[in-house]
Image (cartoon, rainbow, N blue to C red; front, side, top):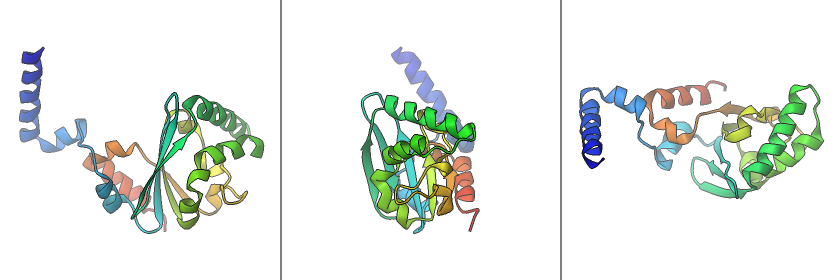
Length: 177
């Protein structure tokens, strides 16, 4: 196993040397918080990245200056409430009883950050991929998020080391004035 691991490392090093762009696409290097702030964010944008886990979930909120980490309920609770909300919303039933608890779980912990920003970059996880965030009520009032914010869905921030992905993310995050 050690010999094979060493051979794989040599092969990957050769690949990086011969074609750095291809290597970056198949094995992007992780990006730092500072790089994300510099490349994706401006004074009017916040990146909200969700990570759902069995015992507790997390929300990382990144703005041009500070970085915030918030503990959220377990994945089972969030996935259950998100599935119910997505189902009711896709059926054409705007139900505040289904979306309000989800808004409180997902957005209330960062309500002050959201209130100050026009653009929300959303990186979903689990059942949140099926959720239309635009229809969630703002934690600051009963209006849907889309009424006061531009919402942009992005792949996980860890993937954004790829030049192509980062370029697309910058293009889409700045496409609407």
